[in-house]
Amino acid sequence: MEGEPILQQVTHAAGRVIVVTGHFAGGELALQAMAARGWRACMPAEHVQPEAFYRWVCDLRSRHGHRLIASDALLRPLVQALRRGAVSS
Image 1 (cartoon, rainbow, N blue to C red):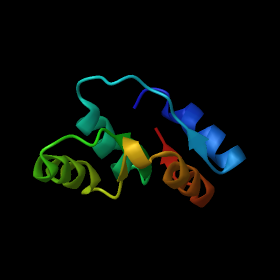
Image 2 (cartoon, rainbow, N blue to C red; image 1 turned 135 degrees about the horizontal axis):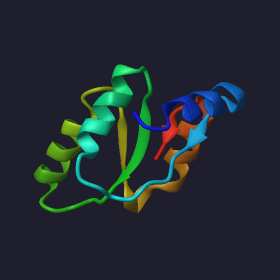
Image 3 (spheres, one colour; image 1 turned 90 degrees about the horizontal axis):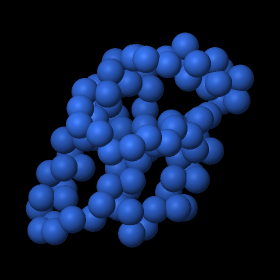
Image 4 (cartoon, one colour; image 1 turned 30 degrees about the vertical axis):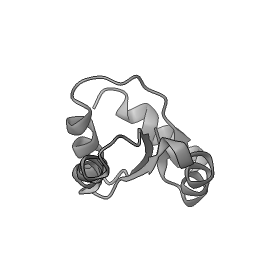
């Protein structure tokens, strides 16, 4: 992963980190790469309809230990995850 040494340094020094990124193709691969390195992310997800599709997307993206939070209920769970040391993106 590009920039991984910087991410490791910041996390080691601060204990937690917020990553801000755009919505690019290949996000699933990046999430798998993070999980393979022991990183767990907590991220917003648009609460799309139908509900079954939203649940499927969340299940797909959370299989490797990441957590998705509906963007309509976002701030408090992200702050709590950050306090636990999760990577927020």
